[in-house]
Length: 377
Image (cartoon, rainbow, N blue to C red):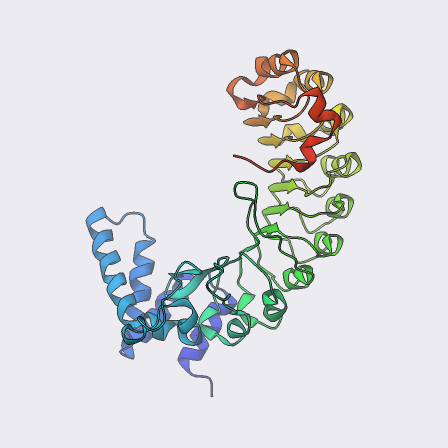
C-alpha cells in the first residue's frame, strides 16, 4: 500500500517545482519527528526575499546545525563518497574533500560535482551509487570533470529525470585541461527530459546525434567546446526542439567552425530565441559577416562573439554598415585580422560594447594560429 510519504515523494519527483508539495512534505516529516522536516522548512524560508538579514543568519545557522547532525543520514548510500569519514577514521584515511562538492536545496541533494583528482587519490566512481540513491531523485545540477565510465553507469539512473544543468569536462586553465573522451554522451542526454543547460568540454561523442535530439525543448544554454571534428551545425540548425535556446557557445579543438555551418545557424528558422552567439575558431571571414548581416539575426542578438578567426577590415565595414549592429550589447572580434581602420569603424557604432584589440599578425593568420588558441575572459 502506498504510504503518505511515498505519495508526497512521488509527487515531488513528478513536479519538483511545486512549493505546496514541498511544504506538505516538510509538515509530514515534522509530524513524524523527522528533523529533515525542519531543515526543509528552513531552506524554503531562505528562498523568501522579504526575510531580514538577521532572520536569514539565524536560519542559516540552524540549517548548518541540522546538517552537522544529520547530513550523513540524508545522503544515504552517497554519504561515504561525499562526506569525510567519521572522526575516529580521519587519521587513518585523510579525506580528499576537494574531489566532490554538493549542496542541498529544499531538503534534497540539489547539486553534485566530481572534480579531477590528484595523482595521490583515486577517482570516485559514484555512477553506480547514483543509480541506487533515492536521495538524488531531485538532483538539478551535475558536473563531471571526467568520464571514465561514469556516463555509461548513469544511463541506468532514475535520478536524472529532474536534472536541469549538466557539465562534462572542464575549460582549459592556463592552456591545459585533461581531454575527456565520452562516446555515450548523446545517449545520456537523450534521457534528460527537463534539461535546461548543457556544457561540454569533451570529445569522442556523436555530435550529429546529440544536436538532433528531440528532448531539448527546455534547453536554454548549449556550450560545445573542444570537439576535435567538424561541428555538424546544419543538424543543430534544423532541430525543431531548440526553439528556446538563447545561448549557443562554440569553440572547437584543432578544427574550425566553417562557413557552411555558420550560414545554417544564422539563417535557421528554429533558433528563434538566440540572444548570445559565440563562434570561435571560425573561417567565416568577410563572407560570413555578409551572411550574418543579411540573415537578420542581428535584430535579436545581444552578444556576438567572433574571436579567433579570419575577419578583415572588409568584414568589419560590412558589420558596421548594418543599422542593427548598434543593438548589440557586446561584439567581440579579437584575434582576427583587423587593422585600426576596421576597429575604428566598429567602435564608432558600438563604443564600449566593442572588444577589438589583440588582433592577429599577418604571419599568425597565414599559419592559422587561431585554430590553436584557447578561450579567454
